[in-house]
Image 1 (cartoon, rainbow, N blue to C red):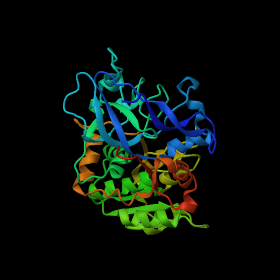
Image 2: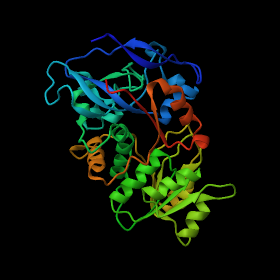
Image 3: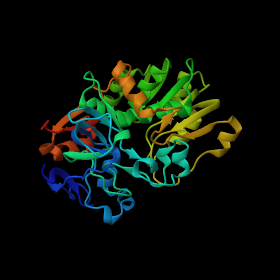
Image 4: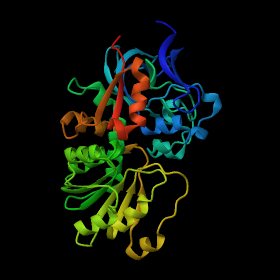
Length: 370
C-alpha cells in the first residue's frame, strides 16, 4: 500500500488561499485503531471558520499542515493489532471524537470517567487539528479507534452517514432539553444543525415546532423536516414578536438555538420563552456576549448548554443517531444539496462559503471507491 494519499491540505492560510490538493502522508495504523478509506465527507461550518481566519488562532502551528474534515463515512481498509469486530470491506460511519480511553491515557480525566468524553481535557478529533493532526475526510484515508466506528446497513448511503456527526448533536440536545410531547418549541436557525434538531423533535413526539430561517431555501427545508410553522427572517421581521403572536403572547416551552456567532439569539430565545421555560444552546458563539439575566431570574428561565455529543445512559448518541437514520425517522437526503468529487474541492468549498447564492445546506465531497 502506498505511504501517501491524495488530500486537500490546509497550511493555515485564509480562503481562497491556504488549500491545495497534493500528496500527503497516509496515516499510520496503530494498535486498536482502524484505517478507513473515506467515501464521503461533509464540509462543516466549523471548517469554514478555520479557513476564514475567525478561529485560526485555536490551531497550534505545529499541527499544520492539516487535513480537515470530521464528518466522515467510508470502508475499512485495514485493522490494527487487537481489533475485533471489523474487517476490510466493512461499510462504517465514523465518530471523530476520541477521549482518554481511546488515546491510551492510563489515568483518564474526570469527564471521560463520567462518560462525558466530549469534554475530555485531552481529546483528539479526527479532522480537527486542535491537539493532534489526525487527517480527516478531505483526504483519501483516516484512522479511527475501533470503538469510534459503527457498521452501516446497506440502506444508509455514505453521504447520509457522513452527516451522523450533525445528527448526534441533535440527539444530545434532546438528552439535555428533555422535550415532552405537548410542548410548543422554537428552533432558531435552519441550517443543517437546526434541520436535524427539528427532525429529532418530531421523532421525540413534538408536534408544534416553530422554526426561523434566514433564507427561503432553508425555510423550505425546515418545512420538509417537520416544522409546523416557519418564520422567514426577511427585512422588518422580528422573530420574537412573531413567536409571541403565534402563541397568544404566552411564549413557548423551549427554544433550541442553532445559530451561534456574534448574534443575539440567546436573548431572543429568552424573550420567546414562557415562564419556567428554557433555552438549549447548540451554536458556537464568538466570545463573551451580554445576556438578559434579569428576565431570566424574574421568569425562571434557564439556559442549558449542549456541546457536541457523548452518550445517553449506556448508549452512545452516535449509535442512537445511526438507528434513527436506519429506521427512516430521520431523512438526511434533504440535507445534502450539493455533491462533488475530490478534484472539485474548490467548487465544494465555494458553494459552502456562498450558500446564499448556491442555496447550499450541506456540500459533500465523494471519494472514488478505489
